Length: 311
Image 1: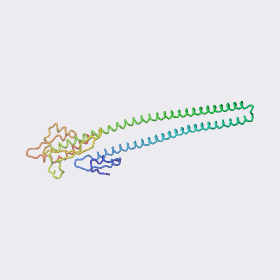
Image 2: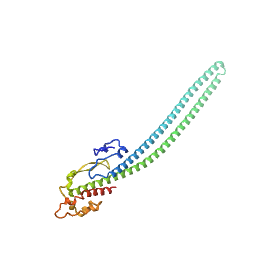
Image 3: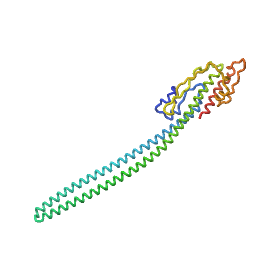
Image 4: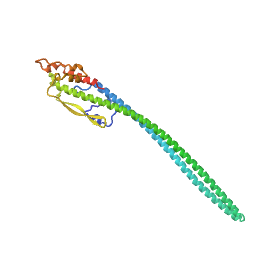
């Protein structure tokens, strides 16, 4: 467990974990917060952070899976390209083979021409016809194979694009739903934090006014001086976030609870109605002796009532 010595220590941490939140401790001060309530709030915050971290890991694994799928698709596309290149190479080989075959036919025709001078024209025409027929067949086969490969490649591209579009639409729907859910949770958390800070500031104002008007008991010499009471103020950071800073309440030189009007006393002690009924100071007695036995109990009652009214 860690004990913060700086009020900004929690915000200065770059790696905040649920264990850090649940194990956080705070120094004790007079009239401080309820430790059980603070511990419960830290446990709740730790569980929320742990849930968010778990969701982040899930999304990271999902993104890694999608990247693997995309890599597989790219490998399939590379395979199709290799098939096309191979087909073009085969076509080139067929052309070269046809050319070589034609050359052989022509050479054979020339040999036959020399052997059979009387029928060389007919034989040459036959050889040329066979050559053209062979070239035509090879051209037709090449075009048919090329068209088949292009059609197969186009169909695969369309299927992959449809699958990618469907997957992308599904991911966008999931992301939109999750984004709205997390945005709602964040808004609720900010509202709860704002309500907590509002109640905290109201409690500090009430405590400052009460301390200014309440006479200190006779053993106040053993307590810390209250002439300057430090309380965290609120400075906006970003849109709805706040960071605590030091703000000083200066107490008046004197004052008693009996000086409060009934309406103001009822407003201040709404959480503890019995505190609004301040006993009158009898003639000839000091207000310190009248409130000596109940000053600390009244202060604790005000703080407890304010904490119970927090959301």
